[in-house]
Length: 401
Image 1 (tube, rainbow, N blue to C red):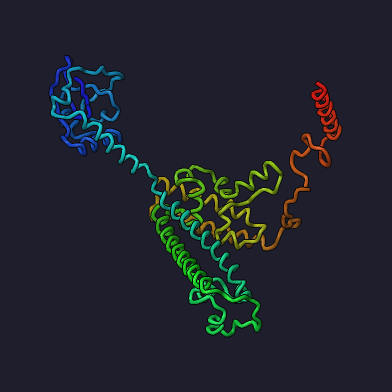
Image 2: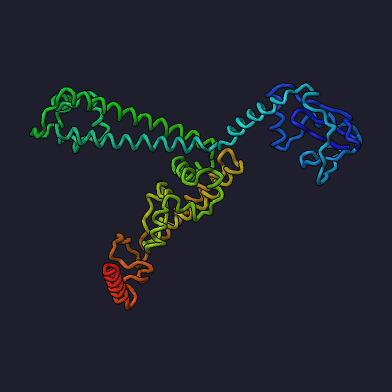
């Protein structure tokens, strides 16, 4: 006997190909799509259990049906022509197409990674921050023609507040007399300029508020998606690592040495090609512990933090420790390691010095390959001169022709 499942039902066939028992699917597009999805996920249908309830053994051609009592696996099962047709079972063949489209739509929805909102929140926040910073820079430059001293006297928040109420110099000094520099080197504003500056200041304040809201949502989302990563690296640094890696699964597969340099790809390639100093950290430099550490300890601390991040990320990817307990433990271990390094190396080691900035006149790796001048092979000048003479000679021959 053989168990055969089609898109419209399950059938138990005897040795001659005749149908012993059958269990048709519901005659609805949604019901058919639901059962096709279960088959795709490797589940056993209720209809298959119903037709396989007889004590006799039967053959199956799918691995997912082996848990059924009496099922025996065969390598190949010839299709039977005795299976009832869809029309005979009361099914319209067009239902298969509609059910397949519905299943494809659900598959696209399920294929979206759960960590995608974290990356989108981060990109949206960076975009709003970037646009707000450019707009603020433009507003300060524009207003400096009217009140050039104001930009150096107040911070950005107070500057935006004053201009939102009115950018005119007299109005600002009426509210803040302590800002009067004693001289008036600016030009007067037109009515249109004043309204445009006030509107632009309101827009920048609104964009800052929107960026703060996006950051709050980002922190809440990453705590649900990757609680261990957020605990050890912080919500913002963890989100940037996710964005650079592409997804939580990809980040979990990266070694700690790669996590340490995420965000420093350009510096790494410059080191490989040009011989610049080796980068010690990428975006994890934004972690408060590393950022506030002495320069001679940042490389060691970056390695320690990258190792803890790798462990926490793999726990998130496999769904273990959903409460973030492992991440908090990794964070405590990292802070203990950071304190140990600071106690053991309170001062710069002998011979340590700051990296001098990279300049083009410094010797590069592989600079002797066909280059003339300092660092090149002997005879490189001669070869370049020979090539020039050879080129001129052939150009003269072509002209004579």
